[in-house]
Length: 421
Image (cartoon, rainbow, N blue to C red; front, side, top):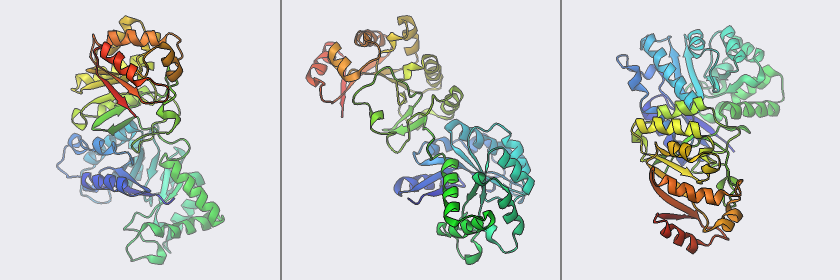
């Protein structure tokens, strides 16, 4: 399937790119503010304030264009560097690929990026010095070549492409600019990327089909769309912000969505490994209460499997004015003491508990808990939770679930029940 990346260069164009990505198949977006789009009198903290909300769109998979442009004397270098650093922080917090513009400032870009950026970096539309490109490739960055690679007098750039590791090279159009040599002077468009691929095939001395496979593989890896696809740790659904903090669970419910799909709402939520605490701290710090009605801790698993992290993140969110909810299977008393559990629940305004059965044997059959006493722990948790927060119960319609009995149990507990599915 053909895929497109549409980057933003301002807040307005980033919003448009995000909207386009959600209405067109195969279109992904990047959100960022190009250095030449900055107002020279701006204060850097205010410039990127609205970017996180755009980055929450499910098909926004990169931050950019951002970077430095010292070729034009439009924006103070200090301001450019400050805003570039903020873009880097957002990319790392959300785990998004960073698309970097550099013109007359390639060395400075590498200095600002440093050696420990935790996300893929693309040196977009690269025409800079050879040594700088090699340093970037040595750090694992990707070097993006546009139509400039095809220009008749650009042997130097073609020699550079031939000298770089093949797995670090990307091709791009930078449309509507940089039209390749065969269509130079006309408005550029994505289909013209084939002319750039032809030149790469020549300098690599490879079969065009082999070159195409390598370049596609590089692109998927750079955009984190390949086998090790990036997991969305935060997503926006039903007007709420959800935090996906773990893939582990104490139950193996027969109706679990994880067994049917890797995500919902266009987000990819499956975990290849447990997300780093530093990333979760950073991403929650980038969010603001006006982005959603509630901040919901869930996970493509059971959030109380990471109790200390959950308590810290929820406490931080509560202090910053979020309405905080916990979605849980209610079995954490199998691992935590009542005192520890009560402390865990303190930051939460609401606790939503998956009931899903009306008794012990039904629960074992449907939810298949690790702990054979999980049903008793669940009932104990419900009573404990209602002393700490507003509690509601949920249940999923599934063969074998006696929903009428579940409703009767919820009524006896004097708690509201939401039936799903």
